[in-house]
Length: 320
Image (cartoon, rainbow, N blue to C red; front, top):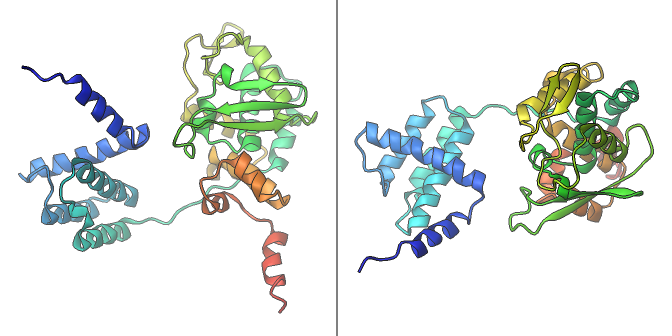
């Protein structure tokens, strides 16, 4: 009797779900890199021997790949062996030393992006206060939400009409999928209505009014690509989110005259800028945990750039 394969496909799907989709894609790419190396050198593809693994990481070290590629290859091979339940060569001290040596050999100094400040956002909003151009309104709305909600761009890009709720006092945003929400419990971010020219809520309302997006289309993306039709702009009809590349180009262009060095900003600069401003305003830690969605204190601190006065408090507290 032929065995029914459906339960086994379900078993495989559940097992792969132990990792995020992006991680599985990344690991698959890394494993393909190993398979290509193994086939080229006529090595056994799986399971990997300790010596073959060491040769592979030595090859990566001389191939001028980044340290992150080496780390990803190590994690992917370790995961594959653990997944299959076979002896894991990645647990070998010899292989671990090869990996660390390869990473050190190819490591590059990090260049941290500068946070966007409210001093840059405010004059930008004032300049375009009376503009009803759809690209301007979309970009300002995105910038203010990234800043006020501490959003990663992936979170913002995946927002749908059904994820937002606006009332007189504030905006509620449901983040259905976040990097720090691994078990899909969902998360809500609330943003207060300020009444200022920089108010994220009123600027979002202006953008939505211009798009004519129907609130009944709850699955449609909130921020979408824009096209020019004759003399007017409109969002595309296709259900498609805005790409990272296009969003960064648009926001850099928007803030070019208000930021000294646009080459040193990224979309994370808005998240970092909001976090820095809140930290310097002495926001309570419990508020950080609810609003910022940080997976750890270390991660939160990595986004915060303290003011000079706050940094000086450290040595002042020593009493010397």
